[in-house]
View (spheres, rainbow over the protein chains, first blue to last red):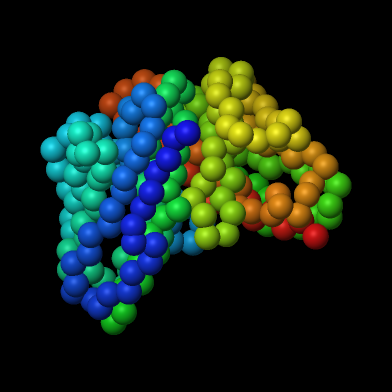
Length: 111
Length: 115
């Protein structure tokens, strides 16, 4: 059965800290890995990763994929209170781009 | 450019009733997927529609059914509601062509409470 595991489940940091969120997966016919940020309801797209070792970057956020070890990390530098959210990792598996999600990491950034 | 829109935003039903949730995809998108997100969990895939056909289905009973219209909008129907169906129902759209193909963009969801 396809599985995505995220760690930690929750995290509390202070503004300015750097955080690393982890995502490991076991899926058949891996196609891509996606990161989403969910603040209230709608998960908003952050990154899609398909190739190992190539870092994707957007401002203070960056992510990388290791297809050999079956994991990805999401880094957030110089955290701000607006980064407080649930971060979801999902893997696109099999035909038809069904997404398999992890349970998410709840990040709280204190001022 | 409107994103993915869902209606209604909130819904309260009683056990045994039926419910219909609606989704309009992002402009230019032709594929709609539905997910159920229980409290404290990640979204779980229900099914996906493309060209008005159910293309793929997750582990949900037949009480969950759907439809896609020629304009790519979609409906999710749930019959014989159970207390355990209480959740946030998310719709996501994507397109099958182009650089950003297969990236799923989500709506704000419908919060369904079953009493």
